[in-house]
Image 1 (cartoon, rainbow over the protein chains, first blue to last red):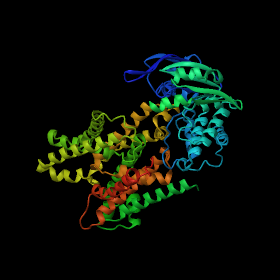
Image 2: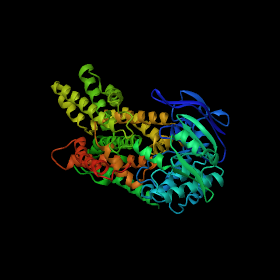
Image 3: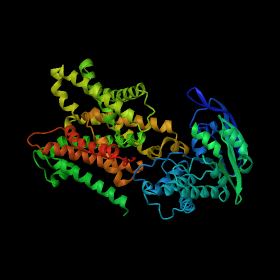
Image 4: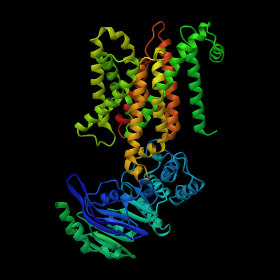
Length: 263
Length: 337
C-alpha cells in the first residue's frame, strides 16, 4: 500500500505540498483532483523521488520510498508524465522495450517472458502490428496509448499518470480512460491519475482525492467525494452534481460561471 | 539480413574502403597488393612499404580515433541535452583543450608528453567554464540545453581568441602550432595517439555500457528516472567520458570541429534513435568521414595540402546550416532528436 504522511515539498521557499497525508487503496483507479497549482503533479513526482521533500515520509508497503533502490522502485511504480518527448526515428517496439530497463542485466536484453509481455501490452492498448511504426508518426490518441503501453511494459503494480488525457479530443479522452479503467479492474493495477475534469473523474475513477492548498482535503469513493459542497470548498466554485443514466454529472451553475468570467 | 544489419554492413564496407584508399592515394599512389605486402611482409628497403607503415598508417589510425571519439561524444551530448546542436566543439571542450596546450607550451614550456595531460585538463576546464557561464546567466535549467550551447559558443570564442593571441605574440611557436590549432591529422603526432588512446577507447566503452540508459534519458529525465535510471550517476559518467575522450582527441591533432555535430545527424536516420545503435554507428561513420576528409584535404587541391580540420569545417558548416534550418527555423516543423 502506498501512503504519504505529513508531506512537505517546496519549490524554492514556497511550499506546494504543505503537510499532506493520504493513503491510496490497492487496485482500481484513484483520481487526484483540485485547483491549478494545488500540488497534484508535485505529489506524483514526490512519490517517485523526483523532488526533494522538506518533511514527511512516503511509504510503499510500510518501507520508506527513499530506502528503495531506484531499479527496485521502477519494478513497483511506473509513471506517465504530463508531457512526453519521443526522439525521432524511435519505433513503438523500441519504446516498449526500453520500459523493461530495470529488469535487464547490464549487457542483457529482454527475455522471452518480456517479449510475451510486450506483445500482450500492444494487444491491451490496441496497437497490435504497429511495433515497427515510428512513435512520432502516430496520431495523438495512438501516441498517448503508446506511452501507456510503455508504462504497462514496465510491469509495475502501481501506475502514476499525470493528466493522461491532456491535449486529446473527447473521443480519445474516453478511449484512453476506458483503457485506464480496464487496467485497474481487469489487470489489478493500482492507478493514481491526475485529472482536471471532474466529469471524467466521476466517470472513470473508483476513488477520488481532492487536494486543496497542498493538503489532501477529502478522500473516498467517487460518489461520496464529488458533491456540490466539496466542489465549493476545494475549488471555490458552485456546481450542480446530479445522476444521469447511473453516472455522476457536474455542471457549473450559471451564476458561478458569470462570476468566474468576471474574475 | 535485416535493414539495420545492411546499414551496418554498408558502414563497415565504407570504412574499409576509406581505410585502404587513404593508405593507397597520395603524392605517390600505392597499389593495394603493395599495401598488403607492407602489412604482412614488410621490406625495410622498399620505399612504398615505408610510406604505408610510417607515414600513412599513423595518419589513418589518428583519423579513425579522432573521428570515432568525436562522433560518439556528439551523439551522446545531443541525446543528454536533447538538443541537435550539442557537440564537443560547441560546449567549450575543444577550445579549452586547445588553450591549455598552447598556454602550457608558451608559459611553462611543457613537453609533448605533458601536452596530452594539459589537453585533458583544458577540456574539463572548458566544459566547466561553459557550465559556469550558463549558471551565471540563470538559464541552466533550460530543458533543451540551449543556454549551455550559447554559453559554450561564448567560452569557445574567448578561449580560441586567447590561444590565437598567445600564438601571434610568440612567433617562434606560431608555425609549429598553426597547423595543430586548425586540426591537422599528421603522422608526426602518432606518439600522442600512443599516449592518449586508452583515454578515448575507455570513454567510448563507458558510453557503450551506458547506451541503454542514455536512450531513456533522451525520452526525458522524469521518464528515465521512473524506468529505473540513476540520472545523476549516468549523466555524470557520460559527461566525464565525453569530456575526457574528446579532449584526448584534441590533444593528438588539435580541434577537428563539426565531426561531433554532423555524424550523429547522418547516422540517426539510418540506424534509429537508440544509443545502443547510434554509438556503434558513429564509431564507424565518424572514422570514415574523418578518413575521407583527410584524403580530400590532401588530394583535392594538390600540390597544396589543406588541414583536415579546415576540410571538416567547410563540410560541417553546410550541414550546420541544414541542422539549424531543420530544427529551429522551419515553423511548425521543429523536430525532436
